[in-house]
Amino acid sequence: MSISGIGSVQTYIYNSQTGKLSSKDGSTDEFVDYFNGILSGESSQSLNGYDLQKKCDIETLVDVKNGFRKPWFNPDIDEYEITCETVSGEEASYSVNGNKILTIYTALDYLPEEVNEWSAKSPFKTHQSKAYDPATNSMNIAVGDVFDLGNGYKLRVREDCVKAVGYGTGSAVNDEKIQHLEYGLSSLIHFADQQWFSSTIRQQHTPMLLSFLRELGIDTSREFTLNGTKCIVKNGEIQESGNKWVVPSSVHNKALQRYEEWLSQPLSAHKESSLKA
Image (tube, rainbow, N blue to C red; front, side):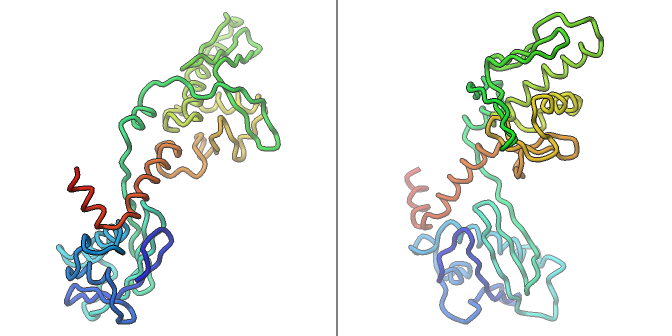
C-alpha cells in the first residue's frame, strides 16, 4: 500500500451490490480493509488522516446511506473503477470509470486570533515605504506616507487608517474624490497587509483607487504587488492574485499547513490525541 498524501493517486474497484472496495490488482490493501470495516484505523501505523478523509469522501461519492448519485450509477453495472487524487489537504477529486465526477473541498478551521486579524480594525502592518519598482510592478504604501494630490489635499497614512489633510480648492469633484480615496485607500492597505477581505474594498471607491495607483506608476492592467501582496484587477475589482479562498492567503496557508500536518499523522496518533483531550 502506498502512503496517502498530497499528490497521491489511487484506484480501487467498488462493488455496488456489496458496497465494498477491492484493490485494482486484487492484492491486500490496508485502506480497502479499513473502508470495508475489517481493519480499524487506530490499529494501523500506515493509515493516516488522508485515508480517513478519503474514506469519508468515497462514502459521499457512493452515497451509501441514500442510494447512488447520478449520473455515474448504472443499474446494469455492478463494479466501478474509482480513482482518488489528493490535490492538497483541502481538495481531492474522484473519478468513476475515467470520468471526473466529484471534487471535494474541506473547510479549514481558523484560530480565534487569526479570525480577529481579518475581522477587527487592526493597525497597518507595513511601516517601511518602498518606491515604485517598474521591474516588478510593485511598491509599498506604509504608515507615515503622505501623498500630495495637487488639489489642495494630501493623504496621510496613519496607524490604522488614511486621513485627508488640507482644505481643497473648493471643487465638489475633488471633495468627492478625496472621500473615496480616504475610505478606499484605508481598505486597500488593510487588504494588501493581509488583514481584510478584498470585498471590503467597495466598488464605488475602486475607480478612484485605480486612478490613484496608476498615478503612482503601478500598471493595473497586469499583476502588481502592493505591500507584498500580489494583486490583479478582475471585473473592475481589486483581488489577490491566485486566491480562491476568500480569506487572506497568509492566514489561509497557516491553517492549511496545520491541517496537512494533522492529516499526515497516523490514525493511531489521532486516537491517542483524542484520548488525551
